[in-house]
Length: 90
Image (cartoon, rainbow, N blue to C red; front, side, top):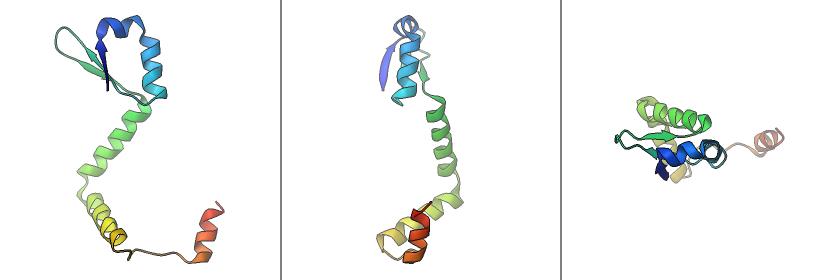
């Protein structure tokens, strides 16, 4: 994570905002008062919110855990070649 002072951020706000958006890099802005803030793109914010939602949802986390077990055991659903062909044509 890039860290810089509020003065440096203010001097080149467009460049730093573009960096956060284009490079998906969070930027921590340090303030003298000690109340720092973070600049991230809206896309990254939404992705983080979705991740937090899933992590807080016990039902979804159980599904993830079950899927991990079936994947490790190679015992999950296996589509037929016809189904794979249909999927790959999308």
